[in-house]
Image 1 (cartoon, rainbow, N blue to C red):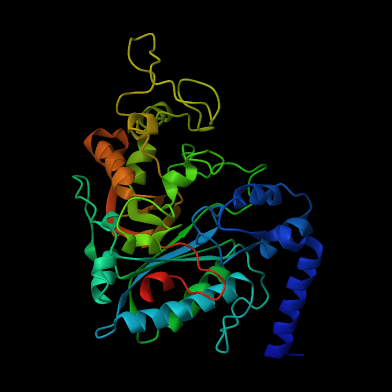
Image 2 (cartoon, rainbow, N blue to C red; image 1 turned 90 degrees about the vertical axis):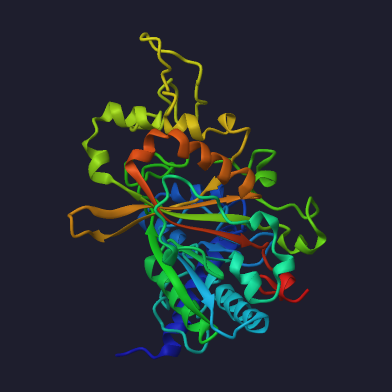
Length: 420
């Protein structure tokens, strides 16, 4: 017997209600502090318990900060930019952000997107779905808000290793979607695309993935497509200066008209292609010298575990630094960059095999910081001058976006900018 749409929707609500009764608010993660809760869920035993926890985990839409910044890495990601349609301005942008915010709120709560829901995710829980919205530099010109464009949104400088495709960079509006289920992520992508209607059209889209939660015996830092443990040096929410490094303060330097960015952050997005055939020809010891860390566990070549501090003053029997002067870990270390740090939250990508037989694969690099001029830019400049890893990667697309703070209940994302 075929179930009706109503029957399916009721079944989904029962599923979420059952999970809510079992787990309650403990499965609802805020925009920050979700890492420990996620790790605890990943360590649960039992096939049934792990599956239900994975599907039931919900991330809050409302809050001081938008979700998808400090939320633990998700299995599937879609990253895309829209340009406002010709003739669309501030009024149309506000209406679009209002529609998008309501759809994101519903989907992140595990509800259907609305009356025209496609039904793709009717039998799934929220699955840690997050939707994050940002504004590109051009958005402020299109909406007549150039006076309220923050100085930190200045164009990124050119780097010598860049080979950027302008068709896959920048854009008026930026959207990041993440979820621990590919269908839930696609469902959100489809709903937001439909919501855009005639107000905006897609400029570019990139799709990525990470390791599935629970795939390892214990929670651990993810690996990239080079097989390297990737993200060890990330600042931690428990560190006293974490907020200062990653989020725009509620009251700080800059004109008062930029106060709408309080609680927000700046996202740098780069499509970095990995030259995997070249990389995989290197012997293991050479790969480790390029990175400055052991491939097996991510520990520094100077010893210890993954979280052991780099000993940048250690020398080998040959009189050379154990961690080479051009090793990626040395050059990018905060202590080598005046304390500059950013929160890296990437996805891997694989977009097929090229005509020459090489994989079009690599990293959708996404990093977060309170000011890219003091974080991403100085670090990337230094990497650009002498990183041993640069021989094996190509920066193919780039974008910078101002991501405002999270909406209060009853608000839509960006309302404090668009309706001030």
